[in-house]
Image 1 (cartoon, rainbow, N blue to C red):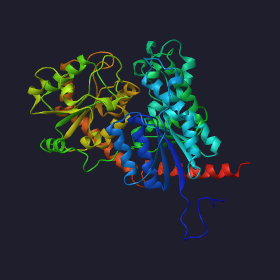
Image 2: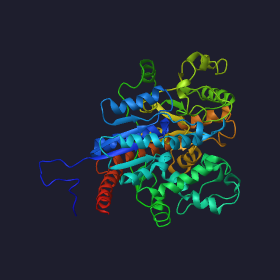
Image 3: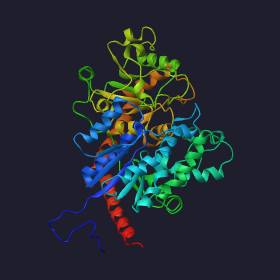
Image 4: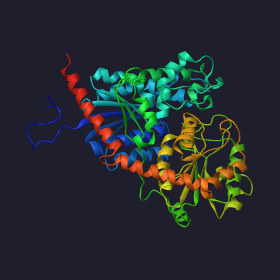
Length: 495
């Protein structure tokens, strides 16, 4: 077979690099995995990569993620202009997911122009989950196109099967008395469905079903997991119930792709405090870049930490009155330290002065999780945070808030076995201090916590092996590259 496009008859010439264009949705949960995929393609698989981003917030964290990719220069980063959402007709109570979808839709002309302005047409287009409406540009450019799902296989299975559920299930999903069946997979309890499925009359539900229907337009799916983490679910995704019916191409497992630990990532005060603590003795409490909680829940969490008598680092954010994803788009507008401390209950700081550390609004999460003193993670269960915890061998208290986090919490606690969680969903009911105390002590000092710690360390080892040369994720991304070459060849040969 003729592959002159990618190799030369002269042994002195290097093979031509593939040029990949990656499109990221706004927000840290999307930007991080797309940037890390781009870096992996460049460093390990010989690609040239341009990442197109839509800045959503003037936050320190987002700026650092972009800087990590361009200094030293690994990727080309193109910032698309912020889309005008006036025509999107978003109401004041539009959900985070609805706003994300609208931003991606309105940015289409700018993205098309940016692709046209590139020095050379890319060889492959990769869009993240909210960018499926842009897959048509791959057809316009006559190049292969892929969807990057920076989440887990169970979430993907539910998403792909949702158009079928839309036809089969009558009434609201949350009102069903039996779990929702997915071919070959663990059923989904009605209370665990992703946010867009909570209200079938809401516009975000129609967008979710549309998105699920557009994924098969791609030539394959990249998934931020590794084979050993979800072997059975991955097998179900690849059997005839899915392949050929709702998935047109392969499912490539390419994870865990997470931010690397930075040697100088921790501030002096934070590092000095952690260095003084015993090994695996600190509970890290953080709810990601967008998670918030009510004032009442914040008080209960504070006193639960105090009652546990365990060391902790708490990334404290201003409480909210309504949406649990309230800070997703305005993370850079956080309170100052003194104002944040005013939301803590009276006497809390004095009671925990010797064992706890409060960090205002944001902290270098992966650097903290990698420190030997950290022994537990009270987390919102966003998939980036989940992978960062597993890769660093840290067991979790699952505290889901929004999006697909309830699904993730069930996966982590009941299937993978690396987390425990409250009896009731924190998004539905206040978790009281006594239960929080028990959860923290279970992870940090009880036998159950020791067993979970051993399990997560096994997965830490398998994750590292998957990403090294010869490992399942390394080879899966290599196969994607080779498949991509084949597709390019066929496209160029087609009339």
